[in-house]
Length: 383
Image (cartoon, rainbow, N blue to C red):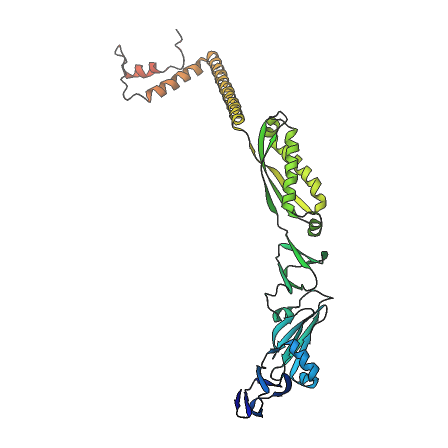
């Protein structure tokens, strides 16, 4: 825009429009091209604006519409949303803007095709798959997205009221004008470790007990309605149960009857979680930790019991061996032939350890007499 003597020269390019005003009042809109305007008093002013996929200020549009409604209708497209309404504005077929409740936007339409898709969010808060692809994913204030895994249960709450249980998959909801919340619960069995708790037994001995509980959510709707934090609630409940069980038992009963203690704990906890939608599949004592001096005494008792048991086994074996020897002696006393065989057996074991044996028959009787008299299974008749 330049002045030359008494004229104002204005060049408007393609994709542009110029608003020509005289003393602040709109005169007309200049189309693309070169314009030479007679302006001896320099009262004219041209404002060149880009009109390709561009917006126009809504407040200026209101002034322009009041002065020149025909011109406003020819140049601009107005998009205005109402209560419970969302609008997706497309420029030349490409989604560009997402408008929420009670918004106004004005677009130049002389060089751009304006498309508007209005969505009523009062009836159904769900965002359709097609609409989800048209909007930006970072619009967290407008759309709430949640992904429910196969091992999870998703509960949809609208304004604090449970609406439905969502199937596994991806879900999106319009979050404008309402509170949308999706609570996800893991349906897989979970292990809850109850750390060492110091407590007194019935005989006033301090000990610490660690436990492990396995739980799973069986009824998600009931669990969310009754328990704010499943693991914390189960942790406290098991604490109370083990304190009550240990307080009614002596140290020997706690150490010797672990299976009975586990069964009592499971019954106690299951009876109290039955109405919460949580199922305790297993619960048991993991470790019993004794103070140092008590642990030493218990170790000594255990060692003494083992020594006594070893002595008993040794005495039983000695008794059995003595009884066996006695039975053998009786048999040999009643049967001389058996005694002679025993002697030969002993002689055989002795000979195995001898490297050389010299045999002397004596009296010149020869080898035959030696072999005859060496082994006799029967005493001579004249003896």
